[in-house]
Length: 165
View 1 (cartoon, rainbow, N blue to C red):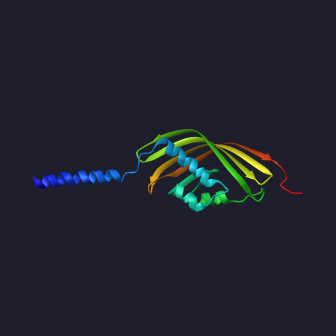
View 2: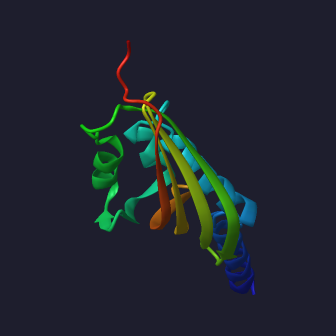
């Protein structure tokens, strides 16, 4: 009898311990906040690769600009300087129309993204994308594992010749 009591008690303790090791339930607002935070990290005024590494998984992949990129390739894409334009001085993104689906340890979100990129005083580029992302828990945090970005429109507005008097 004592043996059965020990087995039942041990089973209960192991079950309780395994439940506490599970990640917290994912709520739709956590998914949207994770996406918004991703774009805050990409802001030209504060971007750095280490911050980006904190919001994506170790095996992160993005489909952007007709390319498949891992974290290092995406970083190179983000930090590339176009010789035909002044350097970026401001970046903004507006994320709208979220559709979130949640599973036990992961989430999928689709949304519309409108980004504005200010190149010095000479050029402003506004782009719209349809995007979707797959997020999962890694190291106790909700992180982006995969991002797919499809360009809808691109408007290039020349503001000046970029030459000062």
